[in-house]
Length: 482
Image 1 (cartoon, rainbow, N blue to C red):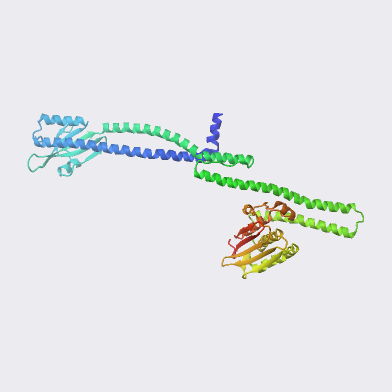
Image 2: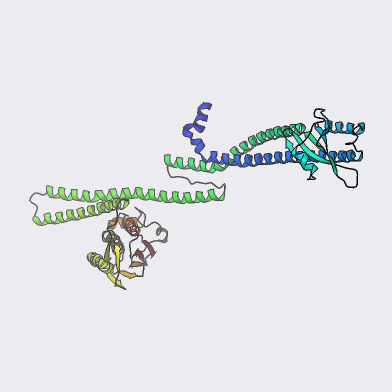
């Protein structure tokens, strides 16, 4: 079971290695180990360089003292001084190296290894030293080598010989290797500590996301109850607040959807039930007069119209949802376009005893889809008539500037509560549900209107007070922006 859980967590489709937790863990691990490795390499290199420099300085100082003694004792003319010979051997032994003394004829007078005495030494470093160039040291294999001039004891201070010294770096390399091994052990131990810390830190940082994922998963499988509550940091708190706002809107949408389904079901059944009752009544009355048939058929026709209105709104909403639906844009006289809409709705206003006025401040032409905008403006004006009072008024005004034209639809109706203004353009939402049902509202008109306006790259806003009327302001670009 443990192996299966491990496999599911780390190997299934490589999801763990794609996770944010793994990336955070790798990031912190690299941040913690790479600088340590670089510092270790730099420190080891500096230590090696410093050790070589110290060894070279020590050997050079000893050789300088020895060269002074050789010059003072005229050792090159009389190499029988056993004291100096002993110092030569002692110095070579001290640094586990080798000393060669070369005279002005480039002949090797002394070799602490006793291998090349009497031979000629024409090494480049020896020649440079005889020419008076500065003393230098260099590393050759496992040895550090240098040349030191031997000066005569006379006042002229001529170079009468050269000490060619070499010192072993084996002990230095051994200490360096020992230090490297120690540092590697510390690096491994430190890397393990950093890895554990990175795992704990990544788990802690990703915990709010895991909680959020679990919460959303519970929402998907269950209901929209409860709120997301994450306050680990400012960002997660902001996400929680934003998500809870979205969740509140989803709950409202769900309530509106359920209510809409219930209302539409009722309203679709009501005309059918009325037609059924009227038809049954006619069938039950044999030899009914023509006037009764005409009255019942007129009632049936009205119920059919009511049913058709509901179905048309639903179909219109479906069409506006299709992203492939394009606009049939053409240059249109907006003044005449609005007058035609108002002419069509004027009988409804007269029947409701509502005065309707059109005000045009200038002649306006714009690139619009007359079918879509006709539906939008018809919904606004028709709502202004339906939700108005007796002897009320509806004013439609048109204005424009160099970029947009503006249509304002104002009424003296019942108004909209402030708490409902943010939701009136949402589908299925109705402010006064009982009154809407009485006049046949489905809660889709303003959603369809906003969809048409937005499709034209326009905007719509509303101002309203309860029992003081409502004003809708629509702004549409004069030139359609693709």
